[in-house]
Image 1: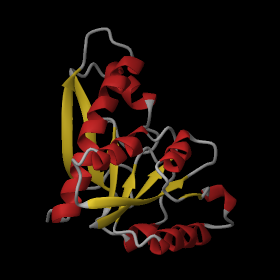
Image 2: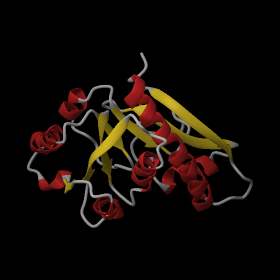
Image 3: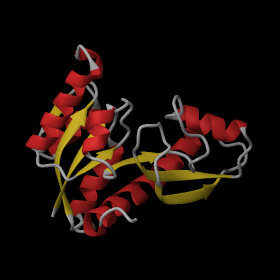
Image 4: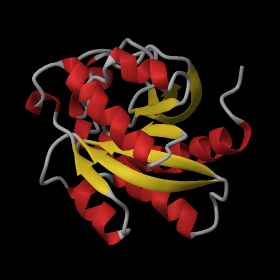
Length: 198
């Protein structure tokens, strides 16, 4: 049984979908060991409380330098005996030393079909606005391994949908989020059961 730590910066709906997959018996090869929040007063923390999971707020700007921030992340995840890191709407860039420690087993979900519409600054509605502005006929979400660059890690899985004519970025975001809730728990379960594919 692998132990998964979730990192979040907002509502935590992907965090909830992963937790629900365990409750429903869909995911059977991992358990959640805790939540790392990048700021206080976010809904993801409320979800962790309801799930009776340990949680901690580690705000990068509260630390004097990146090394101290990395140490806090490492101490927390080590104390939780973490096997896999899952970024569920986590908007803080992870320190290189932390990525090295969990090399190949930090997973992120992105609301576009990478490599399109990824990279620094592409998050939330900005992604969906860019998709619509570019006249794309399809969009979706991508689960990838995290490396040192934003959204550049190896792609593990994608789900696609057709872009509707004249839909708003908000409407597209809502539909893509539904795909995220379907895809992310499935990929985490696969990684927990079989490991990251070569």
